[in-house]
Image (cartoon, rainbow, N blue to C red; front, top):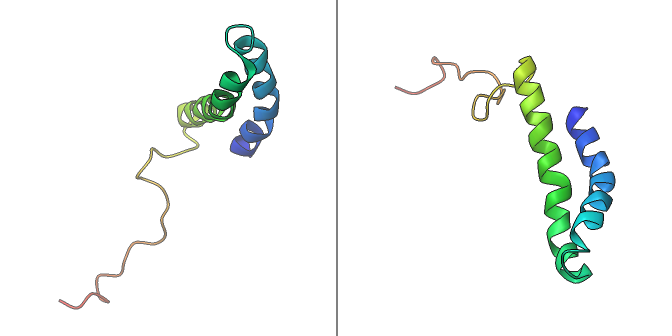
Length: 75
């Protein structure tokens, strides 16, 4: 749910970034960078908050399913 909120809030972040970047560059240049800037920082903040609370395991330690049964492995 937190990640979905981060993506939904990207619409607001997009407009904030445009307000900041358009005066510094032209609209076309700003609009090429803004899709990245409106999503990635939001997701980074959400991931940091989730990991700080202990609600999300670090990358590579996710729940990929049950551990393989050693009896099923042909030895």
